[in-house]
Figure 1 (cartoon, each protein chain N blue to C red):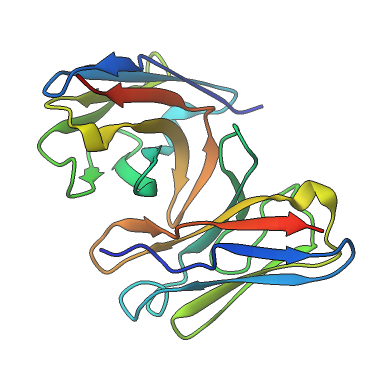
Figure 2: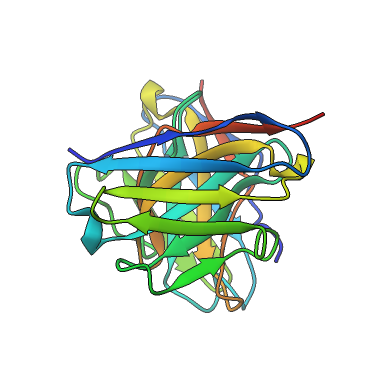
Length: 117
Length: 110
């Protein structure tokens, strides 16, 4: 059974940083594109970033490009999202998910990130 | 990139069929087959229900079906059940090389 478990969320001040992790199990992690999505109170569901199986390609939504970095460690079956220069509008539940071209197949349970002073 | 347009709510009685619309533009829904639908119960993560306009993942009931006409995609739930009460979101790939979602539709079983 596919399992995706996010961690690393919490409360951070504007301008601060957080690193989210996603531990994957139950499937061959290194064979899947992976993605981060978020669900905030204002924008609703939003795709954030994708990363290819081997990490050689990465794509970001405009609002996070230059501030967020997606990465992965296939030896540890883990996905990461380094979030810098956080803003209030980044407040959301963040989900990691497996990505197939065109859709988000299996989702983690989500982790809350709150940006507030 | 604007969000896709969905009705805020749709309701129906048990056993009935309902349809949720998702309207985009010629730069997203109208241009691609990469349209998907997600079901979300309160406090839970979204769950994939339909991909590539009309395909169901393994384990998803055939009461759920998807279609597309022009710039509008639709999700139909037939034989409505109480467990179908949830929020439903559509998503599409876009010509800007990003994925966008709808604002969500709350389905109520009367």
